[in-house]
Every structure is written in C-alpha cells, then in structure tokens.
Length: 294
Image (cartoon, rainbow, N blue to C red; front, side):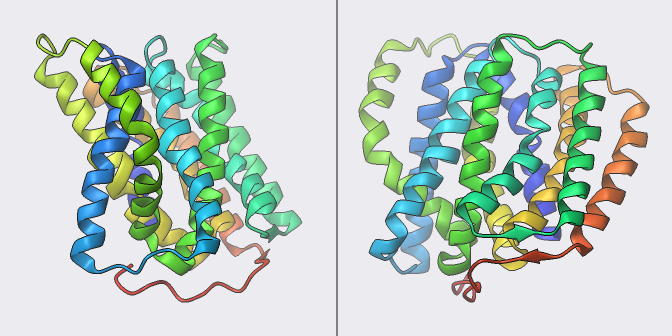
C-alpha cells in the first residue's frame, strides 16, 4: 500500500505537468516523445540490471499494458489538457480507481467481495461528486478524451499489475515501453520534424521532463511494485487519493485554488480505503514471487 501511495503521489503531478507542457507543445508529440525517451531509460535500466527477457506468454499482456499506459492514457490526457484545467481533469480521472477494479476482475481474474465493491463504489462516488461540485458540474467535450484515458489506464494498470508478479514492478513498464517503441518511433520523428521547438520555454520542457521520467517510468516502479505484492483490486484503491494530490499540485504549479472541503472529502475516502483494504479479494491465479530486483 505504501509503495502504491508513492506511485499515486507521482502520478498526481501528471495532469498539471501535462497542462504546462501542452500549452506550448503539440499534445500528440508529447505523448509519443515521452514514450520514446522513457523507453531509452527503461532499456538502459534493463541492461544494467541484467533483467531476464519476457517469455512468449508475456507478450500479449505486455501489449495490452503498452496500449493502456504507454499510448492510450498519455495521448488522450494530453489532448484533454489542451482545453481543460488540471483540476477539471481530475473530475473524470477520479473514476480511475473503480475502473481499475473492474478491469482487474475482467482481465486479472480477481474477484472482490461484495463489501469491497461497496467500499470501492462509495469511495469513487465521493471523489466524483466532490470533483463535480468543485468544477461546477460541467461535462465538457474534452472530458470524452479523459474518459478514454481512464479506460486505457484501467486496463494498463490491471494487466500490468498482474504481470508485475512475474516480471517485477519496474521491469514490466520498461518492457512495455520497449515493445511500443518501434511502432511509435516513425510518427514521433515525423512530428518532431513538424513541431517548432525554438520558442518553447524552460517551464514547458520541465513539464515534459516530469511526464517522461516520473509519470511514464519511475511512478510505475512503485505502482506496479505495490500491485505485485498486494493485488490489483485492493492496492488500486490508494488511487482514490490522487484527486486530492492533483488539486494540491494544480494549486502549487498552476495557481488553481484548493478549498477546505477537500480535506473533509479526503478523510472520508481514506476511511473507505481502510474498509476496502480489509475486505476479501480472491485472486484467480496464485501470484508468483516478484522478480529479483523488483
């Protein structure tokens, strides 16, 4: 749970950092370029650690993981952040913990108990109602991109979290990045040729660096590592707190205000996380020990 919480805190900076970056950079280029550069870092880490290669049976789940968290979420969230604020983006992304539980049941074979479903749904409902209240209850066209991002991330989290039991936490995202890299390199280079870079500010490059190094790579070291130990469904509920961390980052980086009601809603969410953590979750497959160095 603590490993996953660190990952959540890192991911909470993704929307504000993306918002900063896409103010000056093309959102599609941002999504592809962050994946390619993170793949280079991941390849170096795999080489330096002597990590074992995935087996043939790992390729399909790695492809789903890549589609979800290497391509889908970065692309759709970058497009959405061109028009929506980071705090408004947190409205729809607040659905991600519940969506991850559903994906874990569909793709990971996990069977949460009724009490767990109730706690997960109630926590998600609090997050969404709070976020809608804070955002004025609006549902904007950019929210459709955020919904697509939520679906993509939920599948990537569920499948990748299960795969991390065998490959290890950071190894899973590193292999997923490498799998996608050959397919993304041509459009990434083409957009790099088209994208004017001379006038981009240091602030925008800092946002790009954050989503590349932390959001796309380091955050998954903690996130998948926590899922490998505690299971996808239960550990994913720590992400209910991501909305509140995102609001704090949005206030610090973008000047978006954070209301006192945040802390009251956050306390209720923490209580529901504790309930869900104690509820039964039956795994469809007995998890293998995490890989060495995970």
